[in-house]
Length: 258
Image (cartoon, rainbow, N blue to C red; front, top):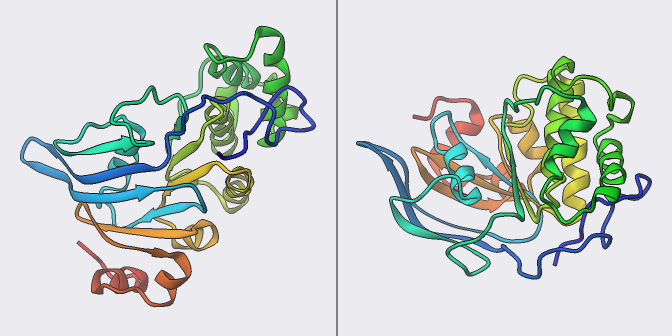
């Protein structure tokens, strides 16, 4: 069972401090799944297992199905054919999964209140919430901005608030959809540093990105997608050293892959 992030003491947000549900949602097993919207095939015959371990990074050209695969594994998208299982079960409450989108929506309230809102309905008692919010703010480097309206933050700061809100769910697996798109290098590094820290605490990261540099920095394994299909799945070092398919070779060279 992966270690647990976050709890009351803002000086110590790392493992073993908060009760988890007894059953794991990992591995997530995707078995021969296809997803169609009308006559358009979004995902085609995808089989994939997401297990505990180093971050899994999805790459591929625009429209390859990366975001759809994240939503499928999160439980936000239903398969047209095939099935998805979470920890061996075909249905799950999903309270141990969280997702952060490329353009997160900030509530019309302070940074701290945005995070506190995510704690509603969780096991944390009212008296513990302030400590957990403080721990999350420390984790994402926003303690000094706790009282600031979240909608007045920069794009990079808002993305860090979104990460804190997702982590307030104490997830076992965290899906990230282009989390640093359109961010400047400093903001990108701040977000990536959080991802590395969360992954090192045992949370399974599954990240979609168009940034090959980011994929090299973060990935333990690469899932390369084209036209809604998984073309390669391999350790990141092997993929970047010598991709097996012509499409992946072209993609790494910067050629158009359609």
